[in-house]
Length: 198
Image (cartoon, rainbow, N blue to C red):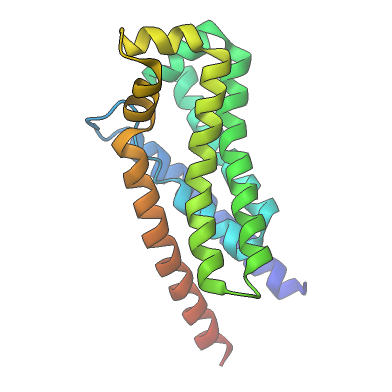
């Protein structure tokens, strides 16, 4: 990678990092009718993973996790604050780990498939990121916070609460946004790069 490419990657990563922070802070301040809010800040994580690879995806995912951790520690994320009070180490590991792994997986899939089918690689990366992020969260809370989750369920069957309460509509909205917006943004960036290269 030449100096110009490295500089472009650093600038691109910095812009995406700023977007991760702004989107997460902004999105967390919007009232949402469901238990957990959709994670729109994953879109720049996906874009970075697709453009620059798994290491950048993991870095942006970690940054996203750090913002989530800050909101948990500050008490802005009420559910996360309850988890933190019960098991601080597990809470921080889940917050940082889920999005870091999701960003890494997104970049890995995108780069493995991009030479064969660019569109498929972008869509799969956009799909796998929220799936990994949510799956790791669910596994983490079930392993480390089972009693807390059962109290949140309030007598509802645990599987039903996890599917409709923790995952629910917000996850579907998140996935829909990611698989629609990520390919559009990648096409725009690719078109801009081609035009500037001419």
